[in-house]
Image (tube, rainbow, N blue to C red; front, side, top):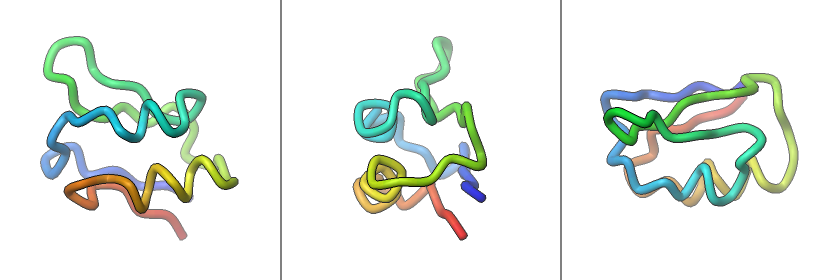
Length: 59
């Protein structure tokens, strides 16, 4: 399961670029929006490791 910490998010958008089917950015504040907490795969791992503030984690 994927978890996001919106308070920690720096609105860089790297997650949405790496896995747009799993992550989006809030139109008002630019912070991460989780679209599918059960997603898996290379893109999710890339988004998790590519987050500059480590606001994304997965089990």
